[in-house]
Length: 73
Image 1 (spheres, rainbow, N blue to C red):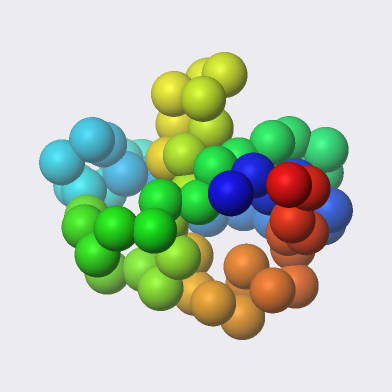
Image 2 (image 1 turned 30 degrees about the horizontal axis):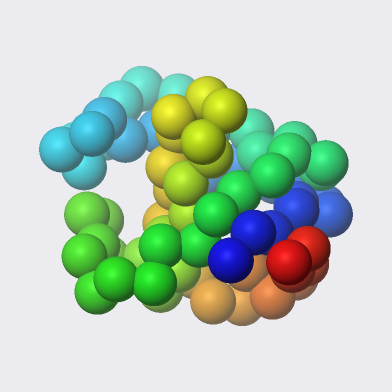
């Protein structure tokens, strides 16, 4: 399913193996994300989202997902 960010927020940066990288990443309102429904989590977040345009991924608490995203399909 596809989701659009409706409220910008920041998350800590992690590499593809889940290791912390210095700094943070801002998720901008208007960006499109696809929800990964698998149980495969890298850093233990409740919801995993992938951005097919930038190849970025994030894992966030369910409360952040509900507050900052809306389903578009």
